[in-house]
Structures are given as C-alpha cells and as structure tokens.
Amino acid sequence: MVRALLAEESGQALTEYILILAFCAIGAATLTRKLMGFFDEGILKLAAQMEKDLKSGRSPLDSWSN
Image (tube, rainbow, N blue to C red):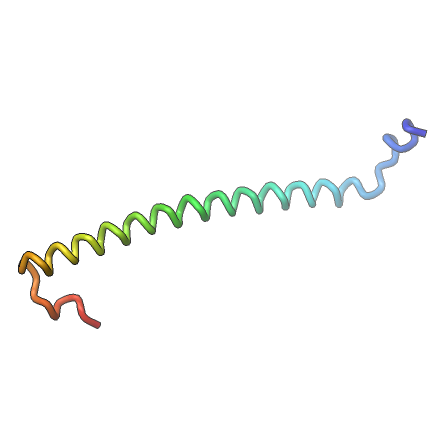
C-alpha cells in the first residue's frame, strides 16, 4: 500500500507548483521587509536633516512646505 502510494504521481506537479509559489511568497515577504527597513531609515535621516536645517537657520522656513 505504501509503495503504491509513493508510486502514484497524479497531483505531483500541482504540489511542486504550490511549493514553488510558497517559496516565492516567503522570499518576496522577506525582501519587502528589508526594503521597507531601508526606506524607513532613509526617511528618518531626511527628516532629521530637515529639522536640523530649519532649526539652525541654514534653510528658509518656507523651503520645505508643500
């Protein structure tokens, strides 16, 4: 019975596609987290520099307005 179950190949391609899709989803989620961390750090550095420039008077107050 076990041999017959292991020899059975119907549905094998679907299982492989599901595994590949799962690995791609995990990889995409990991990459997204790394990229978001990178962008968050960059935005925080930009905001700190803007605040420093505005407080020190190196930049006019209206230069960062919308």
